[in-house]
Image (cartoon, rainbow, N blue to C red; front, side, top):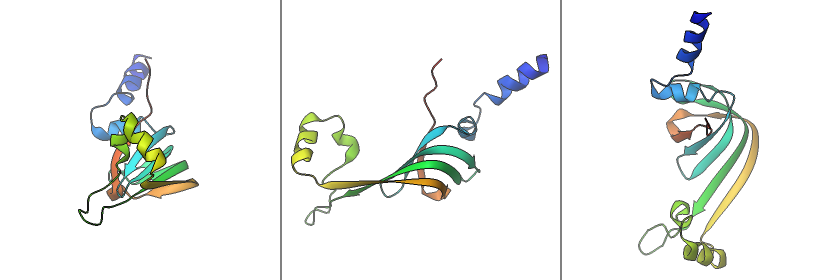
Length: 123
């Protein structure tokens, strides 16, 4: 009985980065990918390269307009979230296009992964 409790505590601890991913199996996670892609889906499997199998995936792809003279990004989604005036201007003069699609099952190649966020745990 004590061994079961020790085993339970060992399987729920985070000692290495991949332990956080292991604890997120069968839960919905957020994955930020290269090229302004974001995925939200249920984690079914993963490996040490961060190759993942996700189910019930919502993919969001953001296309950003580039200034032809300076080659700078005109619109950056992250910086606009906290700026009311920027959101207001963007509403009237959109400079980007976000497209979403749902995918029942998706293999994600790990070399494109930038960030993996597990679900929020309360308690």
